[in-house]
Image 1 (cartoon, one colour):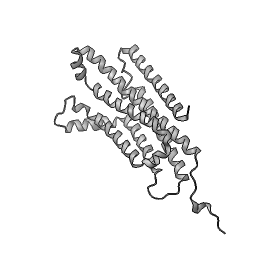
Image 2: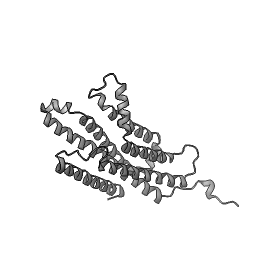
Image 3: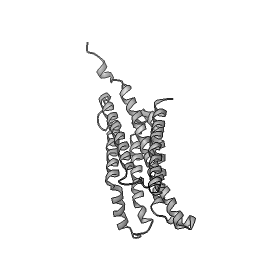
Image 4: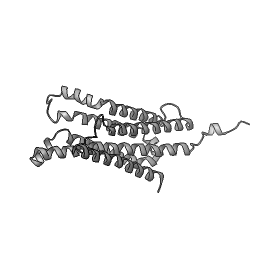
Amino acid sequence: MDSSQRATRFAICATLAVIIFAVLHGLMHSGNPSRYFGEGRYTTAVSCFQLLLTAFFAFSIFRARKAAAWKGGLAGYWVWLIMGCGFVFLAADDALQIHEHIGRIINKLLPMKGTPLAGRADDAVIGFYGLIGLFVLWLFRREILEFRVILRPLAIGFGFMFFSVICDSLGHHEDIFLRLTGDLRSAKKMQGWADVGDGGFTLLAEGMFAAAFYCGWRQAVTVQAPMPAAETVTGV
């Protein structure tokens, strides 16, 4: 089993342990499985930790790559600094609820304000974050492909994030579940489990990103880039 597989399995198992604990904690204390998911709960602290850990690995890769590189201008290694800053922003977003505030501003500007559709504006903001991340990865794809070890956990992480956005959209309001069940109580229960899916898939995605950048950091500090010919030739 290579380091990527080990890191991926560890991240999934550790994150699932947190998710299961939070679900059981919520069920035992209130009967609501999503009680300890969302803003201001301890799962938010776990989320911020995972994002900051990923940022730490990204900054570490940047330092290692910059020290070994000889290219000028916007060299590929700058992507690690950009992504590190991005993960710090996401941690701040998680702690300060930035995308929720942006969603409320969008909601006020939309003509169908107050409707369930308008209430899902913050989901679009999260989706936009994901698109920015994918664009940065594509823009610096040559550098990223130097670290193929990160691709599998990174892809799994984006898959988890996609499911998180879907669950978040479903959990905003019980309207969809009410149409499916015709019973408000059942709809509320299904909404609670959708919130669990939102928080759980978010934590799993962040765990995968941390695992991916950990693998990238291991490669960056163990593999030495070749020196340019101009620096390896001694004078006569």
